[in-house]
Image 1 (cartoon, rainbow, N blue to C red):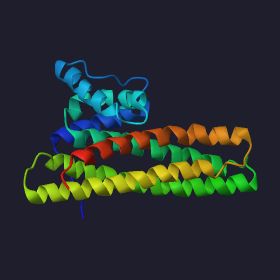
Image 2 (spheres, one colour):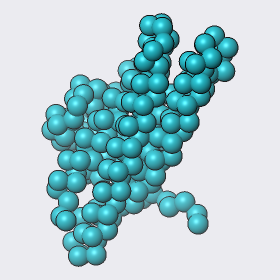
Image 3 (spheres, one colour):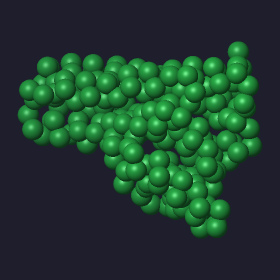
Image 4 (spheres, rainbow, N blue to C red):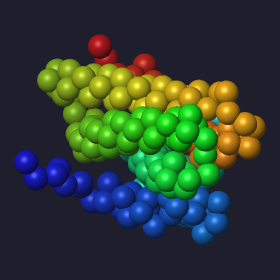
Length: 212
């Protein structure tokens, strides 16, 4: 089956994510338009309920104009940024595992971590695709649309939660290793865990607003 195409608003958001998600602390800046300034308040109100609100604000403010006041688009953006972070963490841990600088036990743990992060990438990719579908159909008031929304949001909650578990298990695998190794792993993975927790928090808040 061909991949689902995104509507114009989500294409704009996708372009913004592709151009900015790898340099959030640098070139990415919130859109200065009046509409975007209003949308920043919307994002801030949702980020306030996440585990790392400052990170959430910094990550999502640049997409205020494209997100608008849509919870589904906001969740889609958060999941997309998290997916990018998961891909980067997996690549970094794969390089670390192949570097030949680890003890045999740590090398095995690194290989396990790469596998777990691969699972997280798959689940986050599913989450992004499912939330994109929900964003395109958001606002439909039929009973069927309501049931479909509930199913999608619950599915994304399950996948994002599992991805967060994988992040934590990856770091746990190095618990008995030298401090330098543990810190290197944390440098690659802890940021991803924070992004995942924030995305999950937004999805959970969205679930609370979705009829059963």
